[in-house]
Length: 100
Image (cartoon, rainbow, N blue to C red; front, side):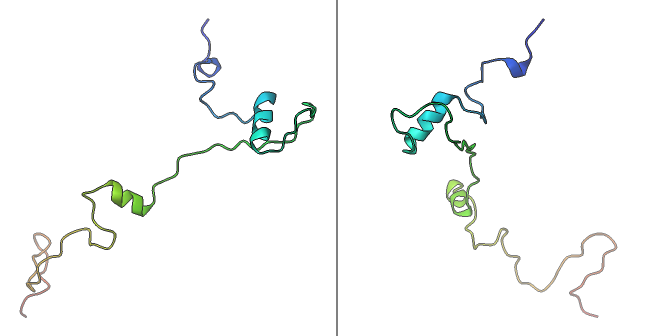
């Protein structure tokens, strides 16, 4: 019989765990300077263990990352020439800028 994927220990240390071991809680308390040597290891205070996720890039960072990208205030497409005449959209479409 095979072992279920969720029970394999290959990625056990990589995943985020909500419950910390006693040693991990004491280590966190020491980092926060809330632990005094000689204190009982029973009845430890709660320790918040938040999952840190990678945030999205801000607009300024995204513009710097892509050198070929347009500047934040520049138009996305080049401006059309100002000739005054427009092409019809397709067969049977009416022209809007012609003489009447």
